[in-house]
Length: 363
Ligand SMILES: [Zn+2]
Image (cartoon, rainbow, N blue to C red; front, side, top):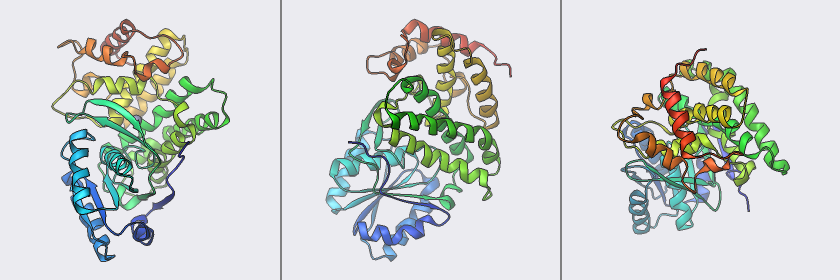
């Protein structure tokens, strides 16, 4: 079974208002799930709009991440209130929690992304973390959300940092799926990989412009936010589980194991993982184009103000055994790193990271 996309998608300016008749058909008593205070106003508007539709609405906020503590607390709130639907309004962690909770209670989920930081509003997947943000695992859900509301007016209110993070995460689709899955003899997987290549090209062309022109209704901005929030999800939907992630996400998951005072966004960490993946490909797979790809990505990442080393994520890999810890988690049995078409061991990871952290990329 494969769930390719949400059943209904509303997109563009005022998509939220346009979605209300459909939402009222689906639910009489929704729970709005959110998190940060920065998005409180938006969620209050969503709450009031639903109240005006005579729905019996209540709300809950995550205290931490998409973690089991928050998930079970919110599930209790839903059982006590008899909610018949979860409306997850926020970034990737909120969307992932909302989808997971709805799936486990067998009620529909409506996703309302409030930034373009991930494609979590689209996919039938939730990443589970500890309370402190350490990656535990990803869970495949029964289906994509029932309704996805991708309202550009909402997305415009998000900090530009979230857009940069979404661009890095969406760029990884091509570099990861093309190396893990290009030999798979399945037409849909091949087509998903090609969509991810077009997606990358579009982000290389429009990403920088979109980052600068976020305040406007600029076509580059619209294309870029939809590329990150929608097309990246479509690639995952069509490609299914065969269209896999690889080193960029495996290294992301390992980096999250080290708890730091300042938290970084998913895509910000994936971007660093992506540069490291390309170095691994150069070292272990004789990929002669890897260096060129690194330089190309590096220029865009600098333009987007994205971190490009683990040091810039607030972690000194040469202290506290951090390098060993990252290499251990990257190479654990269940890691996506083993989807690479060549063998990787701990020593390779240590070598590639220590060289990388000390080098200067010349563009
Ligand atoms: Zn990702």
